[in-house]
Length: 185
Image (tube, rainbow, N blue to C red; front, side, top):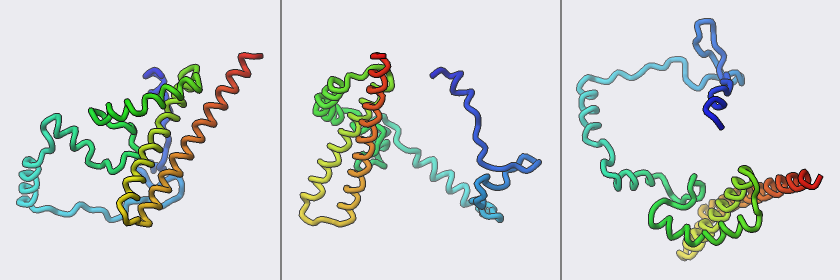
């Protein structure tokens, strides 16, 4: 998609505006999220100076290794990460493990065109997520004590991954049937 196409997307108006241009309330009819009396709390000059001084001491990671490490701080399990396989040596090992799956799916579906290739990659991604989840489940359940909340969470993740996997497979097969029907006519 070219940059011209992206800039021509119309804006969606989510708030009504009064004549002064100030947003009044959401179009949905819901009440505004902010209370009417919103005032910033007054901060003493000493407190403000102390906050600024402390902020200078903790400026975050400075080295590339520290930045890479801190970028993973929020990762707990990675089931729904944008990239199911992490970057780096660990990811390289996992990629070798899943490369046969990836190649096998492309051989099976033989995608034609951008959308079919994209859907085939999504199927591979969902299979990888499911595999990681099952490995996590084995480690989690293998610890002896089974926590009901943990089991419920794993089942919920498994259900979401399966749903995405089968919807994507169905969509890819629908597109391929449509393409093959058009080529035969």
